[in-house]
Every structure is written in structure tokens, then in C-alpha cells.
Length: 309
Image (cartoon, rainbow, N blue to C red):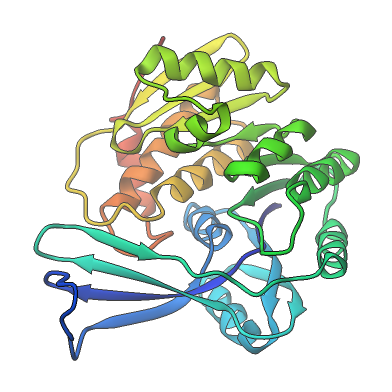
């Protein structure tokens, strides 16, 4: 079974406008509202590719029904630890005139250390040998930066494989537990090492440093340029086919979903990479996070170019 965690959930409001004009009141704007979080985006992709997946995490009590019913419609199981209050609200503004995207992420409620400990042990209770866990996204306010480190360590004790996709201190401290896979983007990689990183070979060098820390698979997402992937003695540049980009929000999460499915199905390393990049490409062609089509993924897998660097 594949599990995706959701520790810092939100309700996303997506506005579809011609052009964003600061200081102007805009009325009758088409909008959508849906439960959001990187764990949900990843799980949606995993399910679309045909694998069973469960989202486990934290959801405020007044938003629990909304999240549960939304995931049910996607065919995704859910197990939530309930906390007081309602989910935070994010806003995404899509501009049709220039293809621009503005994303506003709000701060959630401050949670206590007691809630943190209870929530982490709630998640731990669902871990079983042979499962694959993806720890994605930011940590809630009040959680200690070693929360992902603890969860990765719990997984190792239970015999589960792990993927860590976070940023800042959550990534830096989480790396100490040696997850099986990590997936930073270029900005997160630069933040991790505290320096500007330029050029394919420089990126690959930093990726190898992550591998030297005990991570079996290192994947560095590069947006429309694809991905650099490192495993054992292999270092691959995986180039994405050119497509008409509609919405890149969530493309990195789609990539993670492809990696989880490829790993679960025991694909070869290059084929695992092809599926991941193909998922990111398919997502970029559709609006809404986690939105891919299986047929496009199989098609784009044939078009992803993989070469050693």
C-alpha cells in the first residue's frame, strides 16, 4: 500500500480571471474551492495511475467531512487525526491573458507539542512492513522541525520505504533519518546548501552529496527542464517533451506520484524516472493540482529523453 501524509491541510480557492489588476474590484469571477495539500495532490496521481493509496494526517474537525468526502470521490482512502478549528484558506489566481499564476498560502493555527506527539503516533499506527510512505509538504505551526525525521525513523523500524519532499529545516533535519528517496526542486536544493547552484553538472554534484548522506534515490525536479536523478552509480538527466503548459501548480507533486508508482511496481531506474517526468508533463497540461490522465502518461513516457551525465 502507498500512503501519503497530510500534516498542514488547506482549502484552496481557485479564481479564473482574464488579467490580475491590483487595486481593482473584480466581480462575478468564476471560482472553485477544494481540499488541498501536497499529500492529496500526490495521492490523486497515484490513484489515477491505478494504485491503491491512503492519505493519513491531520484535519481540523470542522473541515473533516469536506476532506473525507472529496477524497472518497477521488477513490482515495483517508485516516485523519482531528484537531480543533477549520482548515486554513489558500488562494490561487489563474490569468488567461498571460498564463500567469499567483498563489497565496495562509498560515494555519498554532498547534501544541502534545498535539504533535499524538498526531505522529496516530500516523505511526498505520505503518506496516512493505508499505511505501510519502512525507510531503510543510509542517504545521508549532510542530518541531524534526517531525519528518521521527516519521522516517518510525517507518524504518516498521520496514517501510519512504519518500521525503519538503523544504527548509523540515527537509534538512528529516534527511538525518536517511529516507529512501528525496525530491527537492532547485530552489529547495539551493536553500539546503545555502548557495546558488547553476548548471546541470553543479546540480548533479549537489545531488550526489545528498546521496552520500545515505539517501538511496535523489530526484531534483527542474520544472519544464525535467529532472536530475541519482541512484547507486547512475546520474541521469531526464528531459521533458515540449507541451503547451496550462497550469504548472502541482507538477512537482505529480512527479512524486509517478516515482511512488514506479518504485511500487519495481520499475527499472530509468523507467521510474520516465514515469515521473511524464506525470509532471501531463499535469502541466491540465488545470488543478493532481490532475493527470493515464493515457498521456504512457504516451509521454516514450518521449522523455534520459541520458547519463
